[in-house]
Figure 1 (spheres, rainbow, N blue to C red):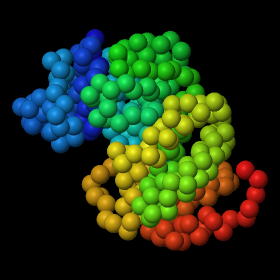
Figure 2 (figure 1 turned 30 degrees about the vertical axis):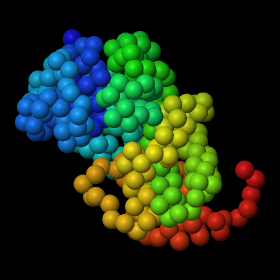
Figure 3 (figure 1 turned 45 degrees about the horizontal axis):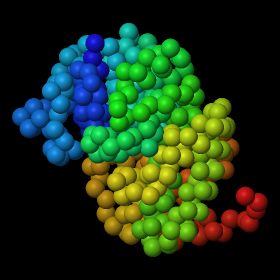
Length: 312
């Protein structure tokens, strides 16, 4: 029995490294030449050596022999991958965070052919996981028996998984915090200060709870790792790509278009969701406008600060 991981980005590679310390892991990558020779992902996680039980392959059928598949592909590519490959008979764990632009769905809904599906989310940076630094994540699955089995297989001495049956809440927490992180980065990039960031985080978290409640999530879920925990991490560290995009927007700098920033697409998807369900999300709307180039920092802040005064 082995674990297969699709996607050799930083997070997929980090999961492969830490899990391979206790069981065989097959990692699929588009180009395996450098990794096979160097026994590390020099492009995404330089300096992190691959354990002996980690096999890198460019052949999907090799990785598909695993009984558990972790899909560490970008959120906007997940649906296309699932449509192109038969996942029946597989236990699939989605390891991406976001809302699909086309359908408005979260990760698990994008893999309908899987026999069992779950989502792995929560506050984590790939470099921390790969280097064995203590990290706690949420594993969300509606099937209690499957959740317990996955929890045992995917936990390590330094990667601790907490399980929940609230898949909707876990997915929304992981998706929406990326949007707020862009906003917090923009605030800091524009030099508006820590107090403004704290205010944006807090009001953004209220919007996260508003969306989650509207979709039937359990209120406590967003108070945990996949909500508040992940929000705190990504809104305060430049290791977060979403935060770094916000910094660039706030400073008026260019940002590398080749870097996947899940929150940018999620902000646009959330605009559609909010309109469809009549949700008032001023922070998320301001971030969506900023990312889309429909406003600048001055306009975004004016938009938020001009709102009527009200009770918290």
